[in-house]
Length: 218
Image 1: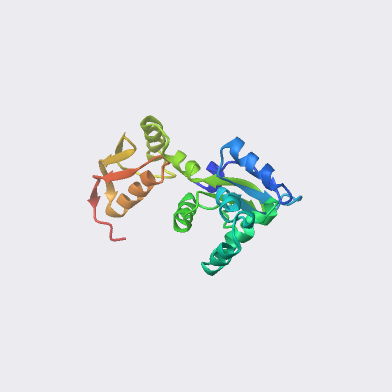
Image 2 (image 1 turned 45 degrees about the vertical axis):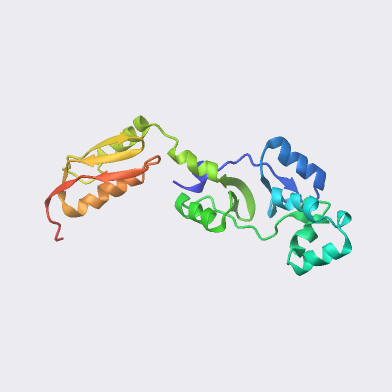
C-alpha cells in the first residue's frame, strides 16, 4: 500500500498571513495538534503545531523580566523566544518540514515518523500540498476484520498472478495472525507464499507451517 491509499486529502490548512489568534482557534475548534501552512498558490511553506503556539505563553518577553530573557538565550531557547513574538502563522511556523510523497510505501513513511518522533507528515507532489498522513492513518491498515483479510488472501492464493501453481496452501486468520499450512512443490516457493500473506493489509504476523516436496536447486 502507498501513502495515497490512506492519506487524508481534505486537509486543514492555514495561510502564511493567518493571525496568531485565528491559527489557535482553527486548531482548537478542529481538535488537531498541527496544520500545514500554504501560500496563495497552494504550495507548502511550513507547518504550525501546538508547540509553536504554546511558545507565546512560555517565552513571551512581555511577561518576563530582562534577566530571565537573557537566561533563556543562554540556555539555548532563543528559537522559542523568537516564535513567542510572532503575530502570524508565518512567524511561528516550522519552515523546514519533512514531507512524504503520494507514491511512497507506508513502511518507509512509518519509519520516518518514528525516527523523527512526529505524528504526521504533509504529502507533497510537485511542491503542492495534496494530503496529510498521520499515525492514525497508518493504524487504519490494521483495522480490518479477519474475514476481510482471509477473503483477500484466499483470492491471491487462487490467482496464478500471485501464487505458484500446484500448491495446496490454506490460510487461517485469527486476530490478524495468519497461519499457513499445506505444501508447495519447490522450497523456493515457501518465502513467496509467506511474503504474499505478509503484504495483505491488516496482517499482524504470519505463522509459517508450510512444507515443500522438492528442494529448489534451480
